[in-house]
Image (cartoon, rainbow, N blue to C red; front, side):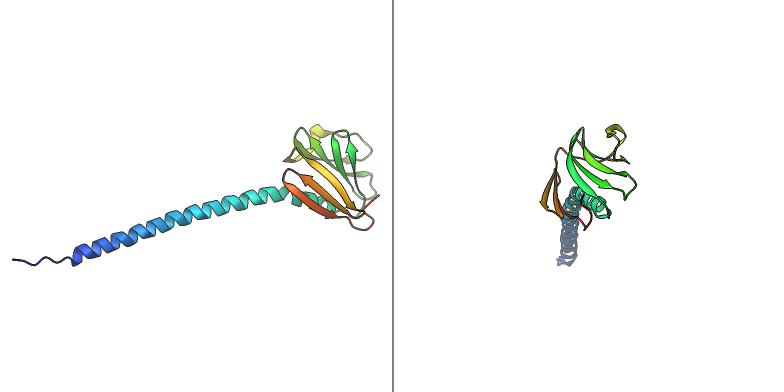
Length: 149
């Protein structure tokens, strides 16, 4: 009688086991990477609006003012002594940026949409510190010396 050798079956079973483990590792790794990437993308989208508001205000060396306008809370950033500037306010559920002559009326239909938000609140913490709150969160803005009217 011939003696059977199980070494061939053992090698095939071991190879199949390692291949299965490798495929499961790839599957779980892909899933984990996808979740991390989605979380990071969501975080970047939330931070984009707040970062934009910080950039607009920090880029100004001149007058920054807040108040109530025709469409609610409005942030005004003057463009030097030119009489022009940026006005940021909510119009039809979007935060918009309206650049033009500060003495003229607002033109929300021609304004640039920044982001969708139903909330735009500005609180003066100190004379040189503002807190801006939107649906995406809040951000503190330090106003440089000479930046307040």
